[in-house]
Image (cartoon, rainbow, N blue to C red; front, top):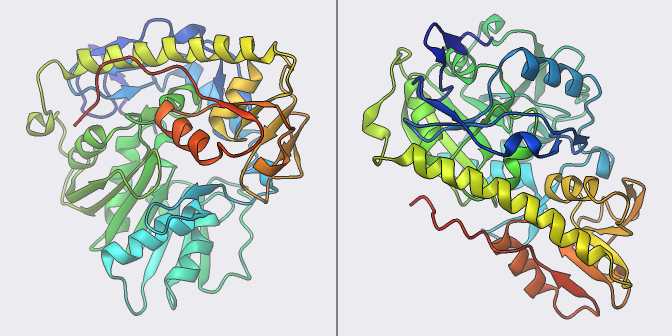
Length: 400
């Protein structure tokens, strides 16, 4: 692991292999958050590849130390007692568990029928395997995780085996291999994808990751090494030796869904055929600098609103809302969440209420990207409270 980090010419891009990384100014002063929603100190470094526009951190000694620290006390979906988060299903128009949405779309896209075998890499507490069990009747389902992962699925129809240790130690292939929000955690994504090629065999690889084009908060997650876009995930997969790559950005909000098949070999150099425009790296670097400034402005805006005499809360209990609350020094009185498995609990020592439980006349800051925050505020505008959306992202660029 980590074999793609650097050579005599300096650190290399984890996505295209070029030695043209540039640091994003100002990022190191931003407090961060972990992927299991716990505040984490400032001090990280963020880079953009000037060749392909890939956004990433360095898998150096400090980053490896930090992820060991983070994973030593990792708690999956603690806000809901282990229940996976709810997302808005764009196909059905109703809120559903994220894995149910993704696996449902995957099954429809691939036309899976009859019996098959599947492996979920980075299976966590088994949310994706449970969704597979419901959608892929008759399939044999396995998971892969770190040693000591809290996976207990003897009651799930079709569950076969939990693999632990190096991916290269898995000596069988599967009809379907999934990586649901796990690729970005590997110290060397290229090495991980290369190790998976014989495991994918003649089957298919499916990857779900955050979409950095739509989610500014992803750069704050300390244990995410790479922050992928539809362009950069295609570069990464093709360079790692995968073919028939298909990328979608509409299966789940703010996320990328990618399907691929295993090719014959790793492609060692950057592939200029998938780098879409001159100056892409400069453009992405400006966008990441814009994200950094916007995040700082959002904290200032929310902190000012919390000084009002009206009750003040934050919408959501996941990455964005937890990060914002951690910067506001106890000025939050409540959290709002539409997920009934979270309502009635506490988060960061504050109660979680459903929208109907917001105090009359209260101010609720919607800590999400402006386009999503605006749609939520409009949908809930009939409640006797005020929803405040973040300042606009005035960066002036969006990938096609």
